[in-house]
Length: 211
Ligand code: GLN
View (tube, protein in one colour):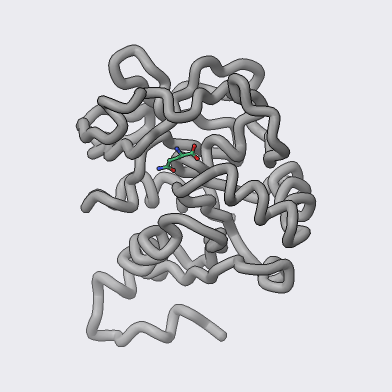
């Protein structure tokens, strides 16, 4: 199916966006805020589909989003459903991936004091629930490398990145703590852009997914 012709010709803005992002993104939908990511992609005219079980994985995709939620639950389900190895392999082979919050934790090679089986593909050390109880949830606007202007950032029982090494690069810091990083085809944020109005982080990720 040619997705370019799904949009009415009178909808110029939509047609423009579809031309710009003619791609299909997989969203891991085992638990957490996956629907909000799909909504953001839809606002950008981008097709997406949910990964709920192993058979969903075989569909063609230009990128993968791992949403926020509970990293231990998502890791357990990824393992139980047989999705862990195919996801790891695809990322290692270059599939663009964006991990939000719990997704960041799943992609981190190291987590302080947390040995559970994860994707562990990115050269970062994550600290879970790093802001403590008092500051469990908060909102700031801060700059990100590669994006113009300040980006709204909503943190919910968020991790932060204690350290990056190897090929991982820091993209944003808030109060001296690393909250966004990139390593080639992999992007992570400790905050939830899917919960704010800005589309900038999703646009940035789609830029990484372009063929
Ligand atoms: N605290 C959660 C965890 O450790 C992450 C929170 C989130 O994704 N908003 O998995």
